[in-house]
Image 1 (tube, rainbow, N blue to C red):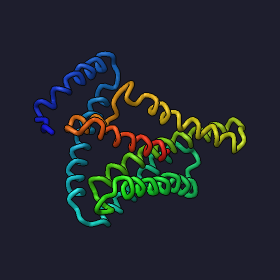
Image 2 (image 1 turned 180 degrees about the horizontal axis):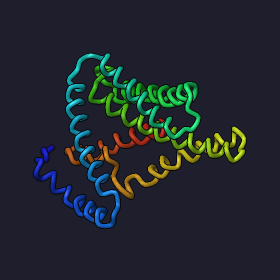
Image 3 (image 1 turned 60 degrees about the vertical axis):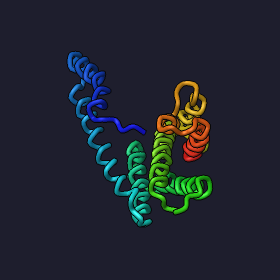
Image 4 (image 1 turned 30 degrees about the vertical axis):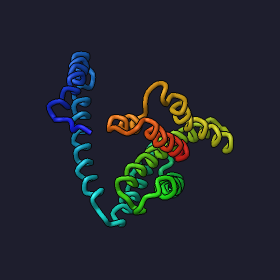
Length: 215
C-alpha cells in the first residue's frame, strides 16, 4: 500500500482550515477545534510509534498487560457517566466489559483466525481495541439509561430491559446500514491495500458479529 507523504496528507487539512475560520468568525470554539486536531495528530503518531514497538515484541506479558490496561481505561471512561461512583459499581463495570470481552477475544483470535502465536500482537491488539471500545460505549449507554429509568420509578427488571434495548440501538442501526450507507473502516482499509473484496467482506462480517456480540 502506498505511503502518503506528509505534504500530500496535509492537503486533507485544507477543508478543516476553512471550517476553523468559520468557527472563529461565528465566535464558536475555534481554538478548541484547532487544539483537538493538533492533539489528534500527536496522539496518533505516538500510538503509531508505540504500536511499532508492541508489534515487534515477543513477550506475551507485554500484550497481557496492554489488554488489562485497555479494560481498565475503557471501564473508567464508561464509569464516568454513572452517578453512583463507588468501588462496587466500578467492579461491576469492569466485569461487564472485561469478562465477555476476553471470552470474545479468545474466540476470535484462537478459533476463528487460528493464530500461530496466541499472543500475536498485530492481531490481538487491534481486535481487543475494537471489542473493548464497543463494550465501553454499550455499557455507558446502558448505565445512563438504567439510572434514568430508575429515577422515573421504573422497576428494576423493566429498567434493565429498557437499558439493554437503548444500548443496542446503535449496533442494530450499524448492521442495517453496513454496505448500503457506507463501507466500514476495516473493509475499506483492506480493499485500499489490495485485498480481494470477498475476503474483506468475510473479515468485516467477523468484525460486525464481534462488535455486536461484545455489546
